[in-house]
Every structure is written in structure tokens, then in C-alpha cells.
Length: 350
Image (cartoon, rainbow, N blue to C red; front, side):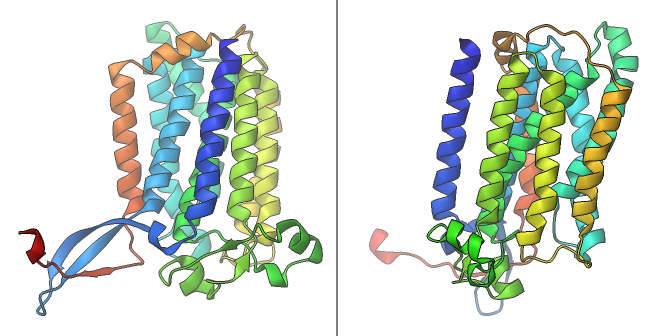
């Protein structure tokens, strides 16, 4: 019963957050969360560094994904130190890869890619788990079952990327094709449901001048699909179907990444088939290679209560705080927008 209550609660939280985001985040005021003064000009104004909701929602997505990962690892009785080692190593590879691969594919220094980062993470994850099992695991007496850990990572990734699409909506990036120029079937499906972005500093405005126009809400579709499959996969994980969850989630998320690229209007590199689509399709092939290489281990039914108790470990709480702050610093400082700030005294408030 605890598993069902947990899944229902998780579903309600995710659905509420997403539906709110779909409604308000395309608006202009939901791009910049704050501004830091950097340099004073001769006319008395200040140059400002914009802090964005893009960074806020990215950091929150990282945090929610990490929380789910620790709960699932704890439910398998993997010690906190083992879970910390695995997630830290994977994030240490994926976070810089998000920027480096985007720079390589799109030729732009100030952009990020979840698709590229997830591809690198998938390639590296099983070998990181094996390495930690063979070093720290041997010394401390634990062995994290590879396929079960990969299933937990797949769940965390699906939910994290789904919530992370709110960041894209707030910044106006990763946007869909104009509805008026799309296939009639897509026009019927998304009539009355399209996104209309406002604000000249959103990427959809300065990159393609599509602000004020109806566009396919591809970010919303992706968010609903990924969080939905992630939550469903979480339930399957708690019932012991780890192999099926890992294979199913990776196939669904990567197949959708390859398919959704066809209805996106933002620049994704040259060529009719993008590098991100190739990575997604290679990821699916890699999944089946992993299933052949790593046999499923008998782990029994995970204990969700033990996993939830894991969250109260001081080292885990500190990790969550550092993760959110690091992700916000990396992705929340806008390099493509600026601000001019003028300070003044409100005399009637003196």
C-alpha cells in the first residue's frame, strides 16, 4: 500500500507542477528570476547579470531526479556512500558534457543539451557502477546490482528531463514548429493547446521571430510523456521489474527524442537527421547490448520505507543542497541576455 500512496502522491505533485508551468511560463515575466548588479555606468545605471527561471527549473529537475535515485537505491539497501559515489561520478561526467556536446553540435558556446548529456551518461553508467562495486564495494561489503541501478537511473532521468522541460518553456527554447505551417493532423490535435510565447528576450523571439505565434507545445508533450513513464517505471521498480523498467524507459525516452526532433523549430545542428537523433538511436542499441552483457540479479522486492528513510541522512541532505546550487550556478546565469538597472529612493516610503 505504501508504494501505491507514494506513486499517487508523486503523480499529483508532478501533474500540478507541469500544468501550472504550461499555463504561465510562456509569458514574458517568467524568464528572469532576479538580477545581480555588476558594473556602474557613467549615467548612473548599472549593468546587470540576469538569473533565470531556466536555471531554477533545471536545478529543481536535478534535485528531484537525485531524490528519486536515493529513494530507489535505499530501497535496495545500497548504502548511502555507494549511492553518493555513483551519482556524483555520473553527474561529474554529464553536467560538463551537456555544454560541451551542445557547443560541438550547434556551434554555440552558451547552450546546453540534455540529449547529449544523457547519451554520455548512459555509455558511462554501467562501467562506473562496476568500478565502484569493485573498489569501494569490496572494501565496504556491498554490491550494487548493475541493472537495478541502471533502472533507477533511467527513472530519475525520465522524471528529471520531464520537469526540466519547464526550464525550456520559461526561456523559450527547444520550441516546436509554427502550428500554421504544420501538418493538418497536428493542427487539429494542438488547436487551442498551442504555446504562444511573449518577450523579445526569449530564444524563440531572437532566434526565429516566432514570439506571438502559435507553436506546437513540444516541450509540454515531452514533459508529460517523460514524467508519466518515469512515474510508471518507478512503480514497476518498486514491484521488482527492474530489467523491464530499464529497457522500457530507455526505449521510450530515446525513441521519443529521435521522433520529437522532427517537430522542433530550434536549431539542432546541420543535416536532416541531427546528431541528437543519432545519439538517441544508438542509445537504444546500447541498451540491448547491456542487457546481454549484464544479467539481471535477484534483488527481491525493494523496501520503499527504507528508501524514504535514506533521505534523512545528513550527508544526503548536504548533497542535495550542493547539487541544486551547483546546477543553478551552471545553468541559471544568462549569458545571452543582459540588464540595465536604475536604482532610486521611493520618497513616499521614507
